Amino acid sequence: MTRGQGPGRPRTKPADERRIDLLDAGQAVFVERGIAAARLDEITERAGVAKGTFYLYFESKGHLAAALRERVVDELIDHQREAVDRLPPEAFGARVDRWLEDAIRAYIQHADLHDLLFEHATASTPIHSGITPENRHIDALRDVLAARIDPPADAPDADTAAILIYAAFHGAAHYLLHERETDRVDAIIAATQQLARRYLLIESV
Amino acid sequence: MTRGQGPGRPRTKPADERRIDLLDAGQAVFVERGIAAARLDEITERAGVAKGTFYLYFESKGHLAAALRERVVDELIDHQREAVDRLPPEAFGARVDRWLEDAIRAYIQHADLHDLLFEHATASTPIHSGITPENRHIDALRDVLAARIDPPADAPDADTAAILIYAAFHGAAHYLLHERETDRVDAIIAATQQLARRYLLIESV
DNA sequence: ACCTGAACACCGTTCAAGT
DNA sequence: ACCTGAACACCGTTCAAGT
Image 1 (cartoon, each protein chain N blue to C red):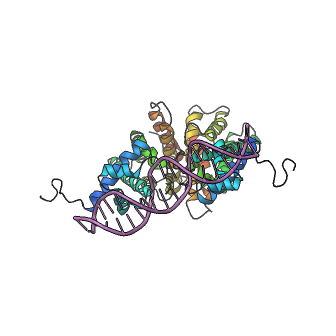
Image 2: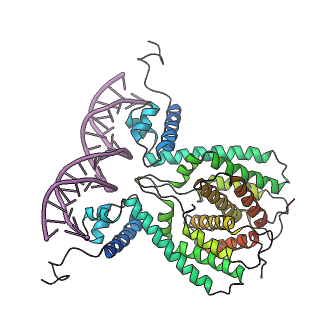
Image 3: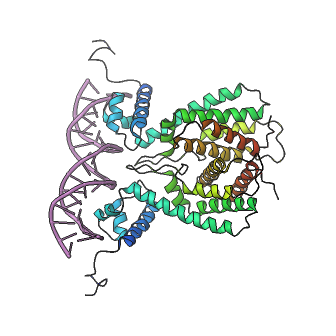
């Protein structure tokens, strides 16, 4: 019996792959059932491992959720950086607009997942909502804001502005998820952009 | 043995009082341990009832947390309405400023409690973060915004503005809780007020 | 090294019985 | 009507053993 083939195939895998299997399985089951109602045995079954294997890779169910959030945020940050970097550095208003629009659309598009990861918690390891000093998505927005060329003297500092604008967009997107009508997405994007432009003293085009 | 005295005292109480006992006990234990780690038997012990009695008053641990949040929000709304109503109706900017300052200070002052109730969830009944259409605190802010006399033509509508400004302040206050230094409170209040004034096109005094 | 899965532990919830 | 508390049910987590 050769390695990796047939019923006698080795039951081990590189740790990196197993971890991804568990992340993928966890994401699927979390979206289906919610974090609290997701059972570990369903996650491990879907990942093709025994129940105990889970604890070789994650400390707890809550830590799996935290790792998933990291993964989602990383993807989002990369995607948005690319989108914004296609715009010229001096087009500050357009860059902020683009960042916000992309963020809100991504949030809505993967509504189930984001809603879960940012707003729920498990019994053993509570997860905080996104708005903390550890949120790298806020850092990414701060980078966009800090790259402003010749800001007006009374513009807010990038640090504070990033927190407030991030909180506004994040809350608004979350609010949308709990509304029935989805056709308000464009209106909320426009409103968030307007808030950012006025607060940051960006002249309208 | 007279009623309500000594070891033979009746073991029943009006339902209203029991409910308050359970809310108070729940609040204390939740703050001490967090919602997830709080055990029902500790809550019922502190409330002076048997474990099973809990389920005569609340459907689950999550529903107790939801009821506590209702109570906290109601108190907050009343307190802020009073504070704002001491200002003249035409002083729109001052009314918004006051509302935001009060809200942030209350949030920080009862940090443990608010952090719990708005950002965590229990195993059985997940609690959403505050920013949903069901949040009456947002309604209260909308009322303040909608009472503006002669708003500028391009001011945002009260509905949208309430969501965005509420999300901004709520997120900012939450962010503060997770920072070490508390002396940024005043700066965050001022920044939130500045954001609201600029977004709402309120002339600075 | 990596994995297994039966057994354990820890509560949230229920329910038959009590005053 | 209101309350009791022992028993149950449901997993998350552990750990001795396997390849």
